[in-house]
Length: 288
Length: 297
Image 1 (cartoon, chains in turn red, blue):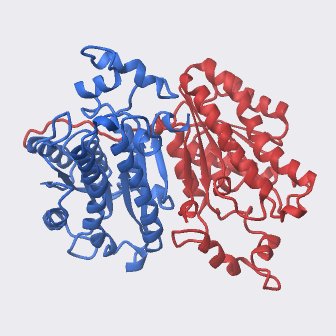
Image 2 (cartoon, rainbow over the protein chains, first blue to last red):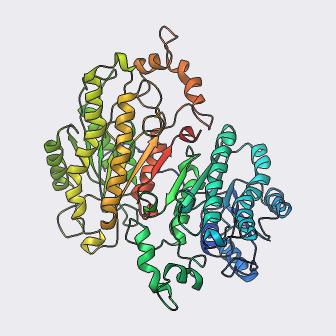
Image 3 (tube, chains in turn green, orange):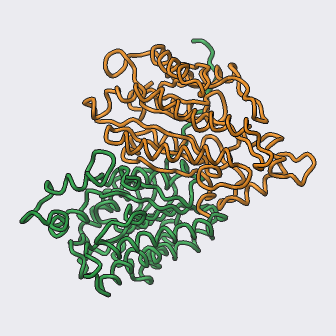
């Protein structure tokens, strides 16, 4: 063998061993996908989900069994896991969730503020309760998720990564979701301010803005009907072309795992100097 | 190199590959399994106040890439010379070891348009030649790079239009200071780096339906010779007679939310590697800052 100089591997590890993550909306969909990946990367987890249907939200919510399924998958991947059934509008419950991480899992290093809901309604039909629900869950609930983690994270003095799931609708203004767009734009402002404020502590804060993701949040009869008013009872196949027309890349929607790939990147040291950013995972819809 | 690496069998073209960020990107993509066509001027630029890379620098990049078990085609070329660039891409593809997916010809999968120069002056002191050279290299040079590479990309059998199920990734290196914000004394640099964003958006729309992703990366100050030179120190600390590295630390730190003055080339390379890989298969048209919070403050 010719003598060869020893090269250093330039790849930075994406491992999250020894870190604890709080993930909301973890019972299914994107949140479950994020939770399992973070577990596979070595993180311990506090998983939160409301696990109950919500009035005025036009599609069903997951149940306790689904949250337990996520927890089981995460444990099989090696994680120490706690589950919390809570509505993120409940600030006291979210404070307890953060304390669970601190007291039982060694601290809090990563927050994935993923829980959120949508309604599709013309502005003339958005009532005060609708507005309060969407803003209360998507915006105030995100605040409730993050706020109680900040003091422990600062006290730990080992940095941290906060990832907020905004939406392409937080950057553009699609019709029939004024309250949803307001909530998703709102978290971007929250993110920027927190990034500037927490940066000196080495805590990074970023938003991701997915395009349509192939989950229960998108696939419900009234949504299909809104997109295809020309059809009697439209189904999934009937909205493929319309959803594809919103994107630049030739896909109608993306998979939860595509969003998770971005979450995993932002969570770890590969992104150690990325903060204050809005990262679209949107097949180009923002620039279309 | 084992087949399960994320970029195994793919070809990356990197400009400005002889040193600094370009070398770091080349080596990082090689570690993920990509073969690299490493391009660099390997010479001096008339209007910059710091020295250019040389052929030995590019050879060292090639050595580092090959040490990772992949093939490298290091070629000296000026991004201002479109026909030379096209020739270099062709020559590079022909010289890479290994068969392509189509059983012979290799195709470009990844482009990192990284080559660029830095400078700065108040407009009343900025020479027309400095403006022109900045635009020629940092803006037209990026267009030339894409013009030279896109034919190979569009013929790539991995694209859906050619029966594949993959995507190609075009990564344009813009800037946080020049391509997102625009501080004083950088009119030429900011024009070029903002121009790259417009190019990115138009091409993302144009090439997206064919499965080609186009994104920009916006680094803050990177710990390379591009910022660490007497000219830059003096530009930032005109109050000092002969400022050095230590004299600009606090100033550079003050631009950031995170408590650091500058980032490492490897920090940019991690973002480049992520955008190059299938982990970002639905990410296109995106401005991705790697800037310690500079652009969001």
